[in-house]
Length: 249
Image (cartoon, rainbow, N blue to C red):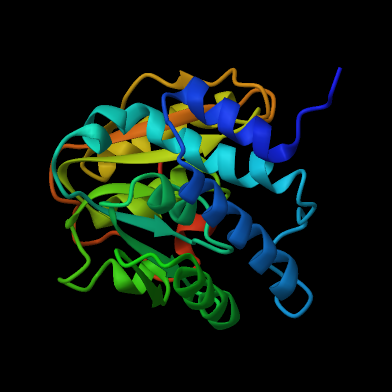
């Protein structure tokens, strides 16, 4: 029996998630794969560059973030979104490829990674994606970014309570934050619930993912923003990691 390629697994996995990818979109993913391989030698973007692994380890994993908000993404409306700590563009770029009307901001603190993102956005021809170089702790305090976005995403950013503090200030009341998590989630959930409450949000039931090609024990944490986040958050750079919200003293 013929072995499925990474691209086959991506297309099949996306379909299982409820996302149909066109030939043009699959071509864009191939361009992103090539850009990763080209730039990874000069910028430490990712440890996974094998063209057979990238489609599932990066692209499919990123697309899975759409599952809790598919009804919103499938509706006839323009949504604003931010990918906090975008790195090599995950999950923001794959989501922008799959949902071309999504107005996406890729926020990245490292200048060289932001430069790569600018290159990738141009190569992929994504007219609705912008790159912002800066730190979440600082940008989230500026009126043009605070309490604004319909959706926020972050992948491999920080432990759950820290990721909530860095991301939720960007989300408007009524919006959603989606965070993919691994096998360490259970130990962080209690603190995550407390942190979400402090930040004006609540955690919805965790969504486990069992799709071929995704890492084992993958799950999505979804936070619904209820009220504007208190102005004391996010705290200055480094404080959220040193003193996580919801942690027992």
